[in-house]
Length: 246
Figure 1 (cartoon, rainbow, N blue to C red):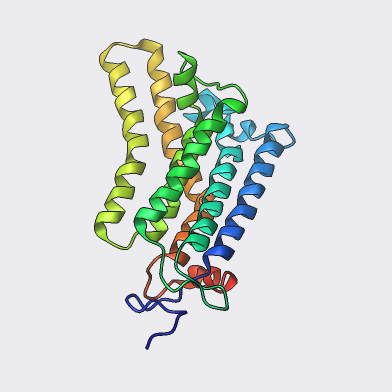
Figure 2 (figure 1 turned 90 degrees about the horizontal axis):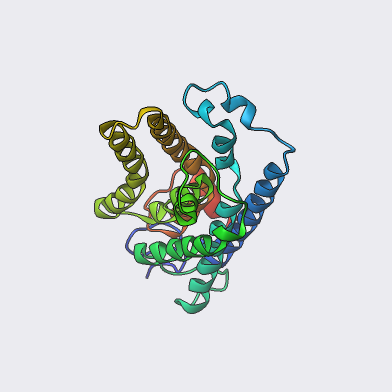
């Protein structure tokens, strides 16, 4: 009879959801604190971006992608949701470990809930800025802090994904950001946008940068997904994360 510490289908030890959720909440609070610290101007990130051929067009706005307060909100809500699945899901053993890995649909739901809270919290933050002016709703949707949260939100279900179909869903969701930036630039070029094309070039540069930054700030969410999801043999980093949260 298989141990309660091991998934009888996939064979990998399953980390305790309660502890993983607690770690995510702490990480989320850290991201929120970092975002506020950067916003106070203690660290000026606009300087390095000023030397970039693309991001140098709007160095101040490009630097805002490192304001991680919204990512912190997302991470903390996902952590709370994970704790909720531990409380309402199958009974855990005495060591606090759950007998079954988290489902992909559950991971999508947790990430979706976190992103929904980000949408609600977005108007409470600083005013949007950047090269694209328009109705307040549009300006909020193209705010790099909001888009960074969108990229990071996919990290948790990506960690849980165990099939090609599940990974394809994640890939399609992430790809919408750079594809939208390329389509926006192409539209400006076709319509003879003139200098406005520079805004499209900036959008493409930011989209690519957001994917890179999002993979960094979303790493705790990804590791949490790997620790809770079905995995036969976790890699070294995920294995250490699981040992911490067991």
